[in-house]
Image (cartoon, rainbow, N blue to C red; front, side, top):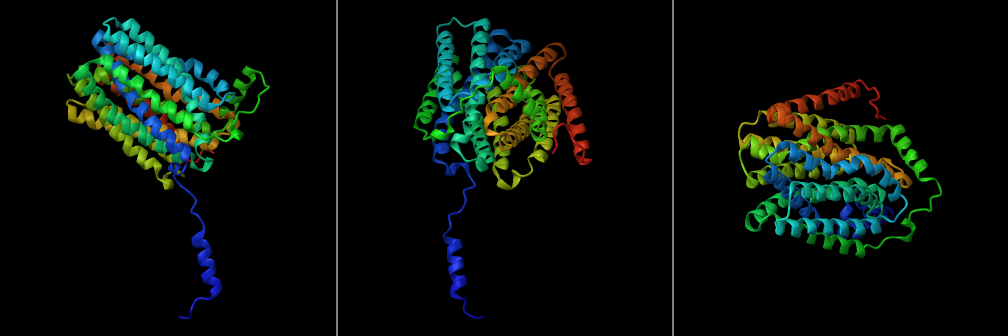
Length: 424
């Protein structure tokens, strides 16, 4: 073989010297800082969720009451989030996020103080859970609208999947830590610890370097017209419709059952806070596996297929939970539920984030938030009512059948190449 020409050597050298295009959200300084700060509050979120659920069970020993307390944390999302979405498109996402994190810290601190003082009751617990839900209904679309300030558009799916990995690692660690804190020091200190975890995320938001060009444009359109514009855009966008439809199915039937884990731990498996922590950690492990799967670049081009199979997995997991007679089978079912639900949650959010126009991001992501986080409110409320009358096994079977129905219809129409309320 002959010696390569000087021109070919120069061409290779030029290609080799070009910087590789980043494929991970972790390449962004802003995203790294924000992720480090939010990891602490993510752990705190799971500590508080387990503590509220277990305290509701201790105070009432009623699956229905546990469902009600879980529901009030999410019901404001069903009513208020679309209205908050309009506001999110009018404000700076960072400023709104700082204020909401500070308010959530205050609520957690009040929960801790009231519990430690011995003044807690089921009414006070539900009331503070409702206030927390009101704050979250504004904070969630604000947090999602912050993504363009953290990473470029091509890295949105990576940012969503990486955040999900961190969130679900905390989902594994949080219940374990919560179980230990509750056993050693009681529920009050679990809430206090959660309040302290909001300080790092507030600091990380203050350290972000955000381009002034990212300020929201001055909007002259009336508030209600903006709201209608967001609803029309979501309705008329095929891909976004599909993502939100499957997100609603997974949230209602999957997350709704997960919110009832305190009742499953007590009624089905005859355990206490330790059993609940094991079940919730199993869900976290499944979710972590799904998050790593979704972080792979090659999987980001098949989001519709991932969404469909995730929805089917939710139904299978709920049915397996209904068949569970011992803790081993229950842990496997909950792990599958965590995995499938995360495929639906991460896949649907990624699909919406890469499809929506920036000027409508707050409004459209508020609708995704409505179904992804409001669905568990209705699901847990309905599930708690059914469980009170007919028991855990029948509740699981009913939810599984109702989940399989719409997912099977979507699958048949996708296979036939027909539009499914949202196929491109």
